[in-house]
Length: 98
Length: 359
Image (tube, rainbow over all chains, first blue to last red; front, side, top):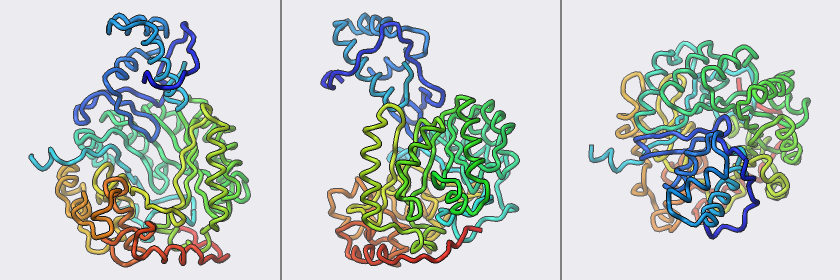
């Protein structure tokens, strides 16, 4: 994610959430969390799963970044860039609302 | 089960609830011999199948047909799929789903709706569908789907009569509020194979349509997702049909037969098992039809030593059989196939004969 080109910034007060028709579910047979969307299935890696779990529409973008930076003891700048890149790419695919 | 451990888990189940359909599209992928209403699986059996599918690892069920709304128990079937934990996708012609039934489907947890359109212009669209007024009804249903905040995909099937209006069809999808549009060039199976000469576009038309899709993707980036099903008679490599035989998906026919793909019954000599007699898991693992072309051991040359063998899996078995009479042959769409010249010859056969409508 870090090597992705600069994504358009996301407002700190945005409330990222999965739109209707996109669901994050746990499936034993498929080995963990999967993101289900129209005609698509994504298997997020551990980091992406941690990000997606927080996109419930409740937490603000700034809060999500703070929480992840704390959880992984990582520099906030880097977490911000990574989370922005992932969420922007999902939003472009209509898999996330900002 | 050691064997089951090595087997891939299917991700998707195409549930062909019925072959009944009010439309008569000449490119329909249903078989020429349609299952009768009396032979259709009942609600209880579908409910069991969805539970078995979820346990097998299936994540998404595509409720299809025919027109799935031809079944009076569509809401119960949808609820059963959702209760089994499956992502539910309704694939509809748009004719037969009323405002009331859509409301009930949304309440039952329907995740996504796909509506087919035949063209961007009402008259042409209704002519292709063989159904007066279909276009208007599709538009009305699309508006209701979007109003209920259920995500909408518009599926536009492309052939000679509409191939020059790809951009108009994407514009229509945007206008209808779709989040996704499929530009699906006709695949020549079932009724489409029968109507091939009438449906086949020229290479120049196809090249323009492919270029148009690229341009539209850039222009509408972030507004709508544009997926394309390639026109395979003009391709260089074959499509990875169903993501590989018996690898990612399965198809249950209206009468309960389980197929690796919707056209598999066209291949003679395959033994299909039914959900009436066996569990879905048993069928996925052991049915002779699923084992016939699973993996790469069955492949002849040039597939057997091809570096792309695990990428396109030799292409489509049904197409190989339809065009060469040998289901094991390399899909002739592949430029490396011994029979590749045949594809260009067939694509050059075009006629203005009237459609043989699916009836």
